[in-house]
Image (cartoon, rainbow, N blue to C red; front, side, top):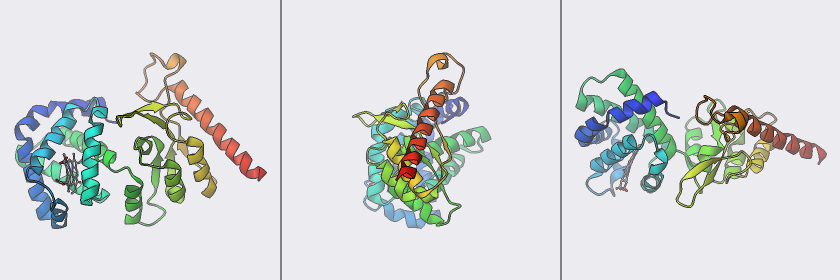
Length: 266
Ligand code: HEM
């Protein structure tokens, strides 16, 4: 979740991006292909104008930073192109670094707050792209050792209709260090809304059952939940209602107790 301050800084850079966006992304590709020549072949089938398309996407992101959901259809289209071209999770860091350096190349010395804000905003955007089972497998394979573990966020992964959450939990159970057990309800247009923990499109008991099948402990958080009773009007961060989360916690603990009881009985 981006802080209000980060969003404000990103929005404030819009006029600069409108003026210099194409120069920045053109420089980005120069840097990318010089510093990481292996990435050039990913663009072999690309039509001319890629730098302009990227500049438009960056500007659209800044424009919609308060309402990222509006970008879902475009992001899905771009993600499909990335998958077809063979873009890997590790490429996102490389491009992120090239983007920030290109901003400095084109715009000159930048306030550190601007660099930090764009770095954070880029991180959130790239995490939207890196969110399939294949992506997780690639990340875990980079360092195939227990210390390289996952926070399994059933909300982020559940937003993609192609993700089979129980199957993902089964496959990576021994590498999940922590679970972020939240649920989302997907809309036909690809957007999604936060749902109550046991509602929504992810079969939460099935996910928990898969995790408990391979492990005894299950550290988890019950974010986000709905705002209930005195949550309405209380001063909290969005997604962190006290009573809504307590309800989610109680429900999830109930599922865990029930599954453990059933396992002992068999
Ligand atoms: C958050 C960061 C990124 C954004 C916003 C972004 C944006 C875009 C956009 C707008 C397109 C054009 C889609 C279209 O033609 O419909 C695209 C295509 C593409 N992007 Fe990215 N991209 C990002 C990261 C990356 C990374 C990390 C790589 C890997 C080096 C990459 C490689 C490609 C490739 C190979 C294409 C396909 C070009 C084609 O087939 O025409 N992108 N991207």
